[in-house]
Length: 211
Image (cartoon, rainbow, N blue to C red):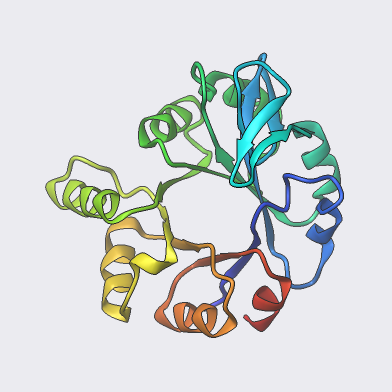
């Protein structure tokens, strides 16, 4: 089975965007925010309406990438849009923007599953996935699927939550499509590929090239 190779954060920096043409890159991921009704990509969490955000290194000046630039530069690769929210509901802005575009090479992921459901309601043909970052969310998804309370929505999961082939198969049985993030070790990426995951996200081209 072919694994989709996703460059993590590749859409958050205009200088990195040309890597979408690298032969080891099938898709480029970007953190997408709605600011004043406009979609922009950057990693940092915004501080209100200021031009600054919070990163792991502390306060940082925001250098947002307009969504139009993502579409223009990323011509052949897929775009994986990690939809983020800090105030308000970005789903209507996302729907308004994407309604004018060919959505066949777009995927939206959300840590907030309610936000994901709103995006799916606005654009039923859009490929939307739930993001799972901890054991509690994983248990909630599995229990919800088994109880029929959650539809078979695809998932992207922190790779350290998967320990065996059986766990991947159980999740794929419920989700239909399983992606993992963020894998920066080639041996681990190859192991996950052998277990049957559908998508692997990495910061490193060397890891993507190994798949």
